[in-house]
Length: 399
Image 1: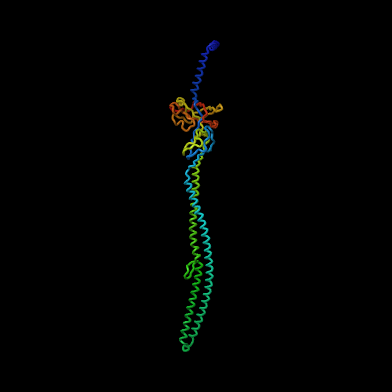
Image 2: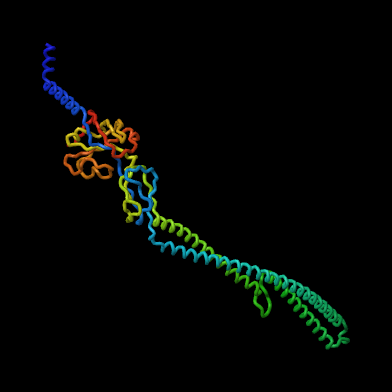
């Protein structure tokens, strides 16, 4: 009987083909039950737009489209028309302040020298005048002693006359003797006053005060030294104020120059990624204008477009087997998990290097898969992939 069946099959190729097609359909049906497959899938990444903070000419642009740029790659925008007036004003004020400060230093040095000279003159005068007063005091004291001796002599003469008998003494002689005693006593008192006056003058001179009729209470040199001391203190205060102003202007100058440099020469660094859009060298852009966009290698994902029917069978956290075809024709096999599901809206494609989900279509849903070993993909943004979504686990409830 088996031999007859083999003979019939051998004689009926159409029947054999039909059976084969039936078996193939049954296999595909079984695969469709247990797996959901997406062939419209790609290696994708988030896009980082690079903007210029200033208007100007693009001096260093991103390299060619599709090139990979390392982290820290630097773009430059130059603006030779940046307003330099604020920085120039600060420079002028600083130069003026530094000139005033230099003049103040010269004036302080001159005042200090003059003050020292006049103080020296005052000290020399004080020493000379003190020596002179010492001699005057010695002389006055000597005269006072002479006056005391004259008073003693006049007193003795009066005493002797008073001891004579009344009839032997002439009234006129007694009056003369008394007058001499009185005159001697007055001369002594006057001379003692002169001595005290000279001593007081010497003590006052030691304190910088001059006591003389018709002369100022202080010497000219001492007065000039005091006036110069006041001028010196005023000029030192001015120097201190100018120094503070100079330091403030220097800080402002540094800030102004840094700000001007940033306005004239902006340097923008980019992250590790693939150049997706670029503005050519020597192009002129406005402040905030885009210099290009980089697909970030640190944000590599797999994205796929699904029909509504397949989308209803996919859920967040679902395990995925991925096969990525690279430029050599080889395939990279790896796994991952669903991290995002998106509906048919324009938000699906914003911020990604490759649009997915066919936002304009009513039957175009998107899915984002995070690969477990993204480094194996080598940032091959745009490489075509095939995703097999494993069955099992929680089901998404989206309609």
